[in-house]
Length: 430
Image 1 (cartoon, rainbow, N blue to C red):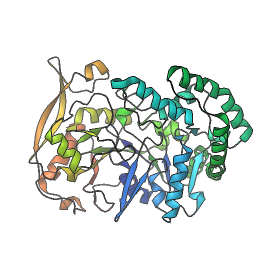
Image 2: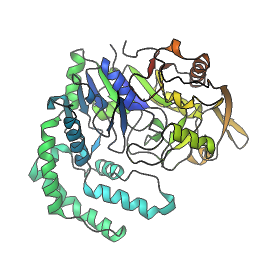
Image 3: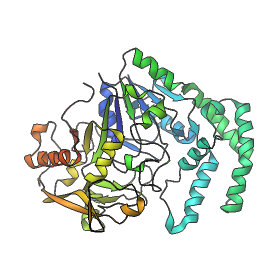
Image 4: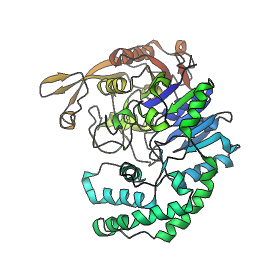
């Protein structure tokens, strides 16, 4: 059995939660390795919908261990609420099923206040953050002044670190951003209470994963956001604040790269994006509205409508390259059921040049126009398909087209939101 990494291959929101939920059947440990509660994974099991922001999707399986790696930034309020909601519904009966690495950095109230106030101040030049404090928390991590879970569960250490940093945060909030300062005593009281709950889940994820590998356990790594939002390799500055590509699993979980054996990129059968930034295949017309409405393209974290466009092979080839994808899982294939013609972007046009490689220069990318090839649609409902043989030939042709233009095999196709509405072409764990 192989260890598998799941990453988004577009700009996030590709349906990773469902795919992770399906692949969890083959894993012993499920690991979240980056991001925060700016991500949202929606799972539909039977008629029951579950939205998770921090806890790995594998938590719906009672015999799996779920781990939150050091690369995550964690909002205690959101995390504890997720735990409470899961327990109310009969999940997470055994607390040992969930482990948080002690080196996880904690999102503090000043991170959230700063995030929101900065976006307000930018006006029409907003990046489009979720306002959850993710970026400011990563800033403090890199600046070596963050508060980790190890710090939070030690009252004296937590109070000392907060006392050191809060005056600077309040000065910035009040004098530059025009917001009210935050009270030290209030934060200490609130977060000390959170620490009592979080302490029972505290552990060393890196150490546990090493023991799992030596014991022959199977690992599944769950990323958030998408490859094109990577802090280094995405469409900067319209990116997230962490490493979303597959290499981020090593950094964010404390595991060596030789342990990552299969890397599956999740991609919609079209493309969506939330927030600002270049989007070459964006459809700002009735077709874009149709994709949004049929696909229910509204953020599970923010509720914001997503920008929609045709499948972009140029952008996806970038994800194949930077993450070393060994397979693609294509989601929301059923959203295209009613289209007679489907377009696929295979190159960009820029100042009279034909570009087949994704431009890493933002100024070039924002001027690129898509070059399309057309594929016939299947014009029928495929949502009941459970095997590749069940799919119409034209649906198979579309999947083959995706394989050809991305040079990456399709291993799974999702034909509806439920767990059972899935066609698996091959199993990356075998």
